[in-house]
Length: 585
Image (cartoon, rainbow, N blue to C red; front, side, top):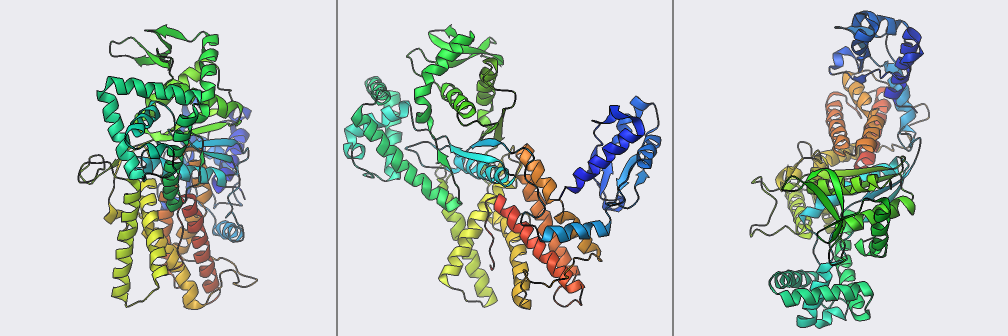
């Protein structure tokens, strides 16, 4: 089934060519959703943009387009409004036919990508020997949602976790543990992750203050890079211990990832230097090998170098990222590579992307996308911290959301005089708590920072996960109340649209394909959140104004079908955000 908007664009383009010739084959008809429903559903503004080129008044141009425009199978007769807007109102019979076809389609009428690609989404990326904290929340949640949407669109998505598992910090940590807790370097899980983090902090402090310790740590890094058996064994134990802790978080959030850390690319780093040298881009600056960048300046106003190899022979993050980029293009055969990190790394990505382009490493058919996001703020408007000023552990944040959801459920059950099993209450608490955290993040434009508030995100009112989940639960309640089997509503069942609330809901249901197509391109999951919130709102208004179980046939079956299609749409949309639904709350 073709998207309504795409069909109308095609018909408008055909009308443009018929009216003004083949030179207008690629002219954008500027078709947008109507700003006011009383003027119709869509509005084409192309006549205004062609006035100067054609030397005619926009209303005259609009009239010539409409005279060649055949949308009789989709719309009521087009109307020209104002200075030359072409207003299009969808026919009720068209809406009914589309809904009836969507109802029986497992994908709800959403086509897969015309040209599916191998795409990589690089997200989450915590550091070994450190706990995941609130700073990892957005990359993990946004990256997962983007991957889900791209997968649904039919792309072959490789979900990569580029963990920080290599470099000076390991020399520093291993050196320190050799002194204070050598068992941690020979025995699995000798320390819990909290103790490991504390030792890391102490090692970092010692590294900053003690030149001898600093040099010993650097030598330990050399041993690690050389594959010294004891150091390599210690490194593997530390990585595995952190990996187990990360997995607890990923399981709680229902995140699937393939780990491919910095260490994976370490053998490829010398080749990056060699290949850049061969292009003539590599220059020596104060003993380091660098590439000078266009558009970036140092404090003195001179050209800024991106260091590829340091004076001591070590490598920078940029070197690893260039090696990873080369591998992803040449070995993974990726055509679109999406990096989900905080906006503070925007310059880093712009810089190493520029180096790769200058070196002609990026084929014309490969797209690199940095997906930046803002900070998570506390209710004081500052970076979200604990009361003591420490960074909030992600595990603590999620547990708190679940605990608050549990307290809310117990309170509601008591008020309603309901009794439920422990298993039911805990499942609802986990789904609602985790969903609330995810949705609060995803419903913001990712480029903005947002204030983290448990009270707001767990509210049953407003643009929240509980509000959307409750809309879905309400539909399942109709099924239970009326003993309805949504999969068996009769042979001749048809959706019939007679009331304004039905038409409003129907039109919104049929816009999901347009929204998913937009998110596939611009990677802004908040567009899908906005769509689902409006869907829940429109459904609740339909529910209030159009009796379902008490209405007469054929309205009763038609409204049951509308309820069922709304539930299917909510379930699909929420799944693309990584959110599970509940049958009861």
